[in-house]
Structure formats: structure tokens, C-alpha cells
Image 1 (tube, helix red, strand yellow):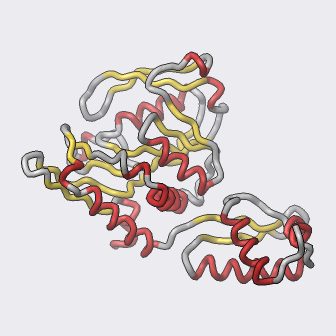
Image 2 (image 1 turned 30 degrees about the horizontal axis):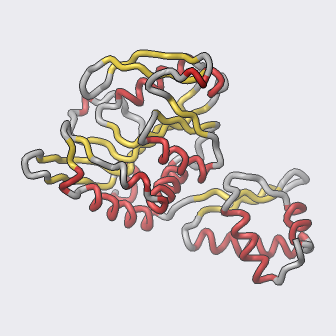
Image 3 (image 1 turned 60 degrees about the vertical axis):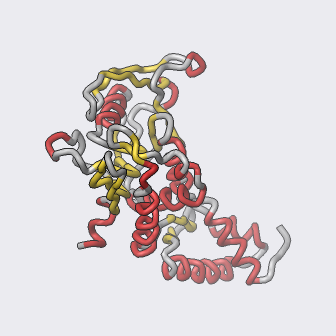
Length: 278
């Protein structure tokens, strides 16, 4: 790369960091890339770090030593996250989204790149300090959420199938009981998809009683993998506490009331925001 003026270098360095989250980049690599002294690079990084933190864009961590460098951790400020989620809740309350069984139509929203990017940053913020090797979801609507989160955390995605695909080779299949309707269903995961002992973040689009997520947890047990966290876009708050199969999870929105006759719903920010409200 040709030598840049400092203003241009700051812009390019910022873009470089934003597109490589959770990646350790050495000062030498930056110095070589921009044909600049390490002292100048350190000054630039200090400016970027200050702006990131002041604007709630994330954190820039510096690691000292020969093998050190800088690592960008995407995060979203609490106030920004709450403002965005309030807007999402208003979209979810639209009467035409109400489906039979107390579910909400969300497929169109899960196709919006901007919304997915925001949700990915929220999950990345919630689990920023967790040790995670891979993001897991079950087909199909959870897939865009998983990839949005993975993009912010620089992690691979593993997709659990409802049935085994011949193109994925041998797989582990289990039966699980759907928490909301008590039906026995099947899910499978290719043996090559997940390494033994992996630390997994489960991401799903909607949780009623938690039967599907519990099924994924049981599937992880077959791989000797560990659940590092559970993130849910929308949870249903209509169930009694004793019906919920999960206790430890992060939800971004909560469906608290559905009137099937009037098509009126109430959606509020989920437990992700509890510390803010308290």
C-alpha cells in the first residue's frame, strides 16, 4: 500500500479494524502496511481507541510484548441498543404479524441487513467476555441471526438440521420434545461440523418454552461440547415460569401479550436490558 497522509491513514486503519473484529493485529503489520513508524501507528491507535469508546462503537485492546498488538471488540452502547430495540418492538407489534399459536411473523425483518447488524452487535456485546469457539443455530430463521453475530465475533457458524442431509455425511441425530406443544421432533448435526470440547453460543430467533434450544443442548452433549451462552431474539412471556425449560439466556425482546381476536400484541425489550432499567 502506498504511503498515506495521516487523515487518510486513520480512516483506512479504522475500516481495517472494523472488518477484523476479535483479531490480534501487530503494530509491525500496521507499520509495514502504511509504511509508517510504530510510534506514529501507536498515536493513531490511541485516537481510534478514544473515538470508539466515546461513541460506543466498541473497545480497542492493546497487548504488550513481542507477540502483542491490538484487538477490536465490537460493542453497542446501552442507550443506543435500547433505542434500536424499542423501534424493533414497535415493528413486532404490527397486527398483521400475529400468527396462530401466539407466534409472530418475523421473516421479513430477519432479511434486513441493518437490523441484523444491530442485533449481531447486541449479542456480541452480551457475550463479549465469554469464551466461544462457534455459533450454533437451528434451521432456518435463526441462520441470519447466527451469521450476523458471527460476523461481529469473527467466529464460524454451525447449523443444526431438522433432518439429516446426505451431502453432510454421517451425523448425530436426537429426538427432543418441543416445549410448547409437547411434540417429539428430530434434529441432527454432521459429525464433522463440530469439534469435541467446543464452546458454543446458541442463537435462535424465537423461544416459547425453550424445547428447541434444550434439544440443541442435548445434541451438544453428544459432541462433548459446552454451552457458552444462549441468545434469543424474541422470547414469549405468556408461559408460566415453571413451563420454561431454560433459565440462563439473553433475550433482546419479549412478547408479553397476544390477543388473537383483535390482533393486538405487546412487545417490550428483553432481559438483555434489565440492568439498564434497574
